[in-house]
Length: 118
Image (cartoon, rainbow, N blue to C red; front, side, top):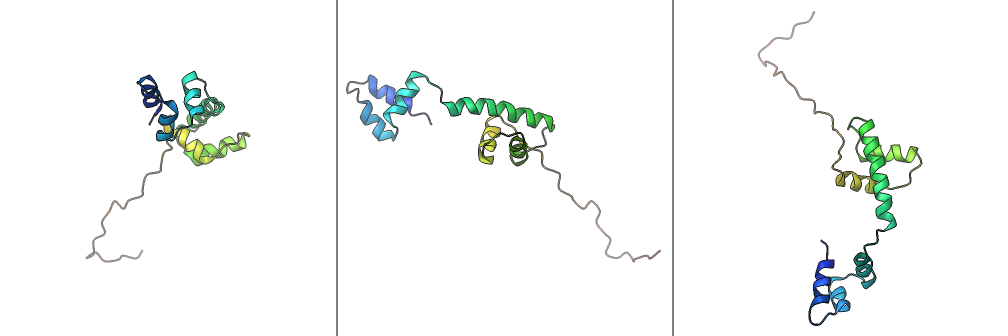
């Protein structure tokens, strides 16, 4: 949940106490002012580039690769990131690997039938 609008509302109120609002919401004042300035973090920029690469790998596999295989492809290409980060970015991009269908028995054997040997 984004807490910055609550801090902004507190700032506009009569008291205007940003420090207290940040303490109550357990957010550093530096993070609030950075958010307010609109600066994008380096990690967010890296996530955009990595998401594009993940989408390309997923498309190359025709949608079959999940996070472990995509992570292995990235590692083979020299990208350093964790599997959990890949999984998070895949969730955000709404990408998922295909799972094989379960094998099911389609015939029911007749218990009264006799075994024939050929």
